[in-house]
Amino acid sequence: MKNIVVTGGSGKAGRAVCRHLVEQGYKVLNIDIQPSSDPVCPFYKVDLNDRGQVMDALQWTGGKDHPFREFSTPDAVVHFAAIPAPDLLPEDVTFRNNMVSTYNVFDAALRVGVKRILWASSETTLGLPFSPENPPAYAPVDEDHPMRPESAYSLSKDLGEEMARQMQRWNPDTTFIGLRLSNVMEPGDYDRFPTFQDDLNFRQWNLWGYIDARDCAQAVRKALHVDFVGADNFIIANADTVMEKTSAELMAEVYPDVPVNGELEPHQTLLSIEKARRVLGYEPEFSWRAR
Image (cartoon, rainbow, N blue to C red; front, side, top):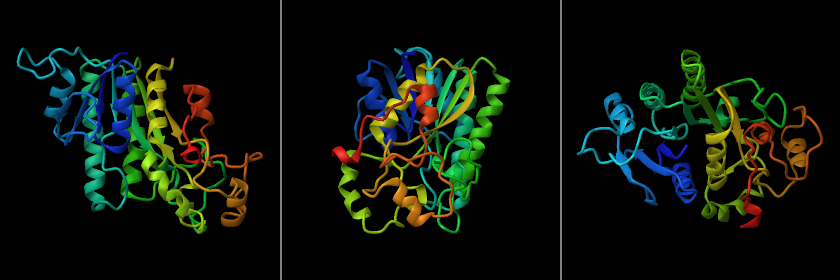
């Protein structure tokens, strides 16, 4: 499991994934529509909405003039390319881009013989943005929480998970792992966290969660090697919240009628990562509190 294609390797999470994998000794190719600001690995400009371009990028066998002929067929594909959030573009543009690109990557990967596909699903599949008018069914929210996509973006991620299940059913010796990423943060973002503290409602929409990009990269590496065949999804968040108030206080003040399962540790994430810990061996290493 050494030759890895990362789609969207120029994005916020993708940059961290590429850097981490290169530092761990993997051979990585970033395919994206624009070069990375952190060019730690080769870059190949690819429009993922063009199936032919995706096939070319994943085959790596285009003859002596192919720019990546020194690589062999990828051992795994990490698909992080997407329009990354709601409300950045018209809904139909977001939906069409994310669905078509995901289909093209999944299909091309399978056709060239890739057996393991990791991809960025989203916390938004679970009903975000939460609010007192649209509260979670319970907390901490885990993978058993009802799927409640509330935008074209989250619907594209929900349907991407269904696509992964069905394609894995067609190819029963493959592995599809969807990482339901929380709001991705880089170390430089932590300077803003003190401004969150005066208004509990400012970050209520995702239960005050986040994921450090470096821990996102760790989750990818763990998922590359977990002994698992099938299709499954995992919430990937940091172990704490973005707030100084305790998690119990946050729930009591903003979501007093939402059932809380178990006794909460002081700053315990309200986006449960217990499944990722148990199955993937994931354990967050970074926190804004240690900035």
